[in-house]
Length: 254
Image 1 (cartoon, rainbow, N blue to C red):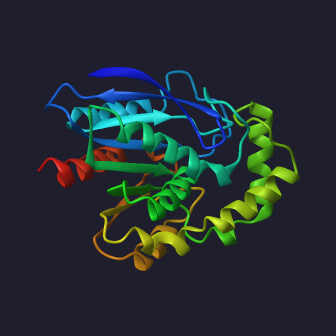
Image 2 (cartoon, rainbow, N blue to C red):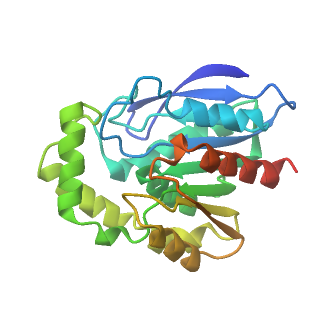
């Protein structure tokens, strides 16, 4: 497996940073998945390598993967702005679309939690995205209580995991952004591309009924996988990530 650093700019020149993981198996151009993290509220625990582990699992089945940080998080520049995250993802897709090892016809996204919201919206407007996996994705985001978002912003501010946030203004904006990007509004617009909805039965933040609601709203081809006992952080659950990797493998390498 090869890992290379990726740097690119979003629409407003905000610099974003990521890493492209390329498998040893198979020959280029490779099917490729762009991984979209959620809204971080606390630093990673010791030994937690983040989405690199998900990328490595995808590589193990022959699928390349890119991890990157949205604006206001991690190694990327700028301040947190959920409404700009879809544009950040578009910049990542631009980078991958022009990369010599990436198969343009087998280019997908896998979004997690808040990152799934951004990924779904980007896919709804960008036909270059050929497959979509939504992991622990909220359904109707207009129902997220403001108090929950205030707690998210407070924790993220205290931990330093989000830059440029404050209570209550950032929470109010986040609520408006979630409503504007509401997954139930856009889920049908990814048709006829393949869609996976992956959720844990023990998700402590987003009820599994949200996944079922999205599945009901979506058009074929679609698949719903409920992973028994899996929590909200699906990337830390081996069974969930095996299901994710298997879905992309079956889609593109069967």
